[in-house]
Image (tube, rainbow, N blue to C red; front, side, top):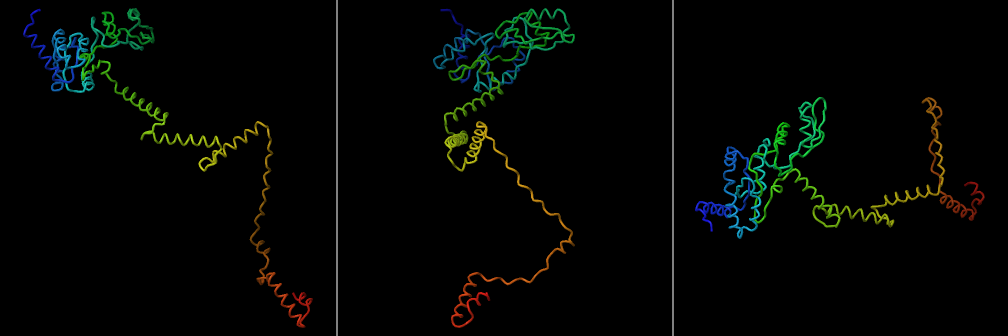
Length: 349
């Protein structure tokens, strides 16, 4: 067995103690991070995050010692890339990643650096005059041409893929185009929490895209609930409307007369009538419009006054037929007693 110095044992012990103390452990790559900026970030994160940097081999030993109590923590070993360090915190992993991402700044690419993401050159004009630059662009597979006396890039092109090493030609051209693909800051590669390891791609959330996806999920869930007739407080009104429409469709199909669909049934009957008329080529004569009675023209007020008949005295209301019959019967009785004859009575009447 090789001799292990007491100093290394203490380093491993410190790492183990910190892993047991904090619920969240992250791996970070500190390569190409200037020392002044590291000190600034440490001061900004003081009280929230503790960073410990040591040799990769010692970190692996510490992780191996705690794998029984921290299930799945050995999955952090492949994430120890570049100049590895451990990050300890009690903060939410996603909030922490967001904070660290905001603290980063852009920097030009240097030969030999590893691309943290796909580096793309966008289509559009450039400030360069036609010349050797066209050949340099072509060497990297970038299509270009001349527009308005300047070189223009014709189509988007990924010149360096994530994880690839940047060459001197690539670094030079990206710098001349003003593209700064590198990020100076704490590069979090993974975070461990309660047996789960969140990789960088999972932690790097686009909030606008996340909210859009969440809204889409809500719409899909609601559509599914309505489709399977699953009642909830958010779907009950939609389901009632759906049930009403289906019931109405059945009523119309079966010609069921009901107050709620009489107008639709009449409309259906009219459409059927018109369809039959068209299919049988039935001609219906149009009704002639009734002649409009012309009103007499207004006459002058003097003429109206002259034509107006003189008012006569009101006649007494004529006797009813029953009264006349009763009177005739009475006169007949009197005639039987020697009074005037029936003819006289009739004449008198």
